[in-house]
Length: 397
Image (tube, rainbow, N blue to C red; front, top):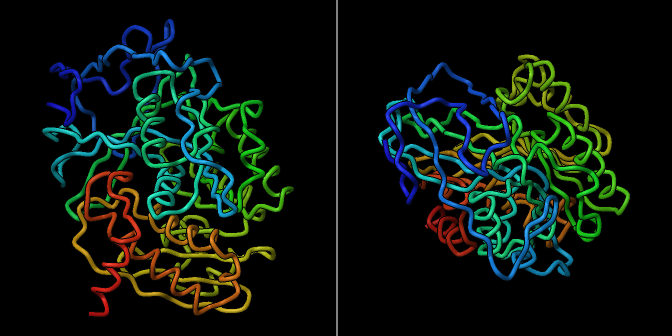
């Protein structure tokens, strides 16, 4: 079994929770992994290449690399994304179990990071706050943010935990199942004292998910960050991004996701998440969806994959049709959608009160999601504004 991109060869025996060699593992460190299927691959020990340090920067626990800060944060339309950034390993062939995949493509991912890159690729201003390992993958992810013009002043590096990995099983229709390598990974260990509070206060929108709520100390850091943003008058954007295998139980996931529900100004959820959060109620019933609409919410979005999305505000609601494409990999489609709509709202928040312009923004966001599913991996597949406009033109041609 080989990995696409230059990684060390795998041996014939694979243990999903094996430790890294040398500096990539702590003493007596045996990390656990999470999976949402019964795949039990047999076989491999990961031996990463040696860590390379830049002569122009230094790495300390909880500090950013001085040379990888990316774009300016003076833009008034800045979107700051908080949470996890990791490496997705995506099979080169769809429809196979992980153990049967002949090779994997390495792709940077993590929903908040995907959104940050998506906004920057669309020409917007974005920043990322989160923690990665002081390891080869962590440095790679920092470089990817910089290359994509995402400000990473809020990025931290942990010398005692590795960057999270996720192996993704692709079904023949491009839908996914995940097997995560964390517990703990560096993203789970971000502390409140490591937050870049000035960066948060500069934002027009502060965007986050629910994975950062699962464990301490990241949970406390998450709650503190949202409070700082709220107190500064920043719009709060929430995509729960349900990943049940990462939570101790379904009930703890439901409770955790809903624990911060009423603080958000903008919420994006999927049909499946509506079913989960309402204990099995009909996600297509507007009365069911309205139960999730809290008093201070400005916009509730429900994504429906290729069928588009629904939107709900206090004044109006409706549906915007999607764009039909042949899906290859749906990883990152929801994040691309979020990037599309947040880039428009950050540029002009008044569209939240203007249904016609909101619908135009959602058509744009639907196109972002559609384009993303036509390639493997999340960040590599995120579109430019030019690609989105071309896709929209084809729908009216």
